[in-house]
Image (tube, rainbow, N blue to C red):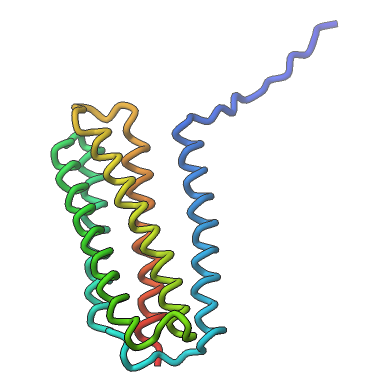
Length: 189
């Protein structure tokens, strides 16, 4: 009688695959958090938006983040094609736009305090949503900065592939979150 040796398929996942899965799971859970915050707007203040909401500033911030998403994409594409210098330039451009975005929200808060302080329903929603989002933007800026310093002296992709890919996906997530925040806070009447 011959012994039966089972044939098992080798199901090994690379650390890159595991990192990608972990990132996507994190992004989905974070998206759930933003959905809850966005939903709270309707429970706290309904669908009305006060007249003093600066729609022009909100639109400007939205355009800035969308352009920064393009520069982040270009950074990742440049890195994947071995253009490390181009990747660094695009990372710095994205970081710069992120910093300008944070400053723009700071200006918005300064003006918003005059019309709807945090003690009002709309103020609570505005400062909570934009505050959580700005925290994500700052985290994104710091992450992109870390990636910039990680690749600054490299000449090849090597172990940096997921660092760049993960940071850029995070940045895109932050941008997409704002695309939902903008109409929820600024455009509803």
